Image (cartoon, rainbow, N blue to C red; front, side, top):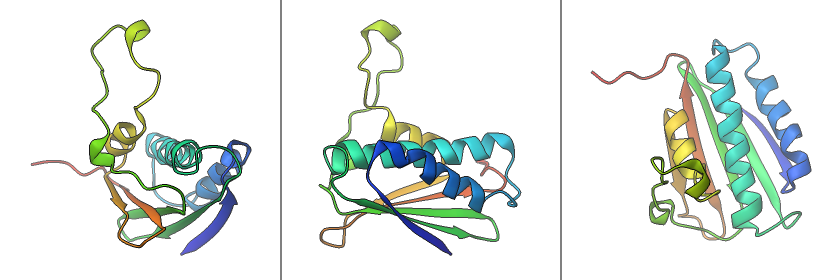
Length: 141
């Protein structure tokens, strides 16, 4: 397992991306899966900065990566304000772009592009998002 802690600042998102992409460089993900992993981590960390901490440089983001036989498990932890992802309204994907809300796609996006995404707020003061991406996409029968 690889673990690193980063300042919760937008200018550290590229370092977070490099950490994740370096960890999966030899894993059997295709280009689309690698992009999905990078995008999901970036979106999750951006949400931590903007929503959990309410702005730049107000805390840290801890990221743990565990290569599994079937894929990768990524755990992102912060100590910011918790939220209930089930209370996030479903995004409007049908209205014209110019009338849609600019924000609110993060949780939806993460759940769509990762094979698993679970939010855990059971430990007081710790917000945790665990995401899994399988080497071969799960297919429903």
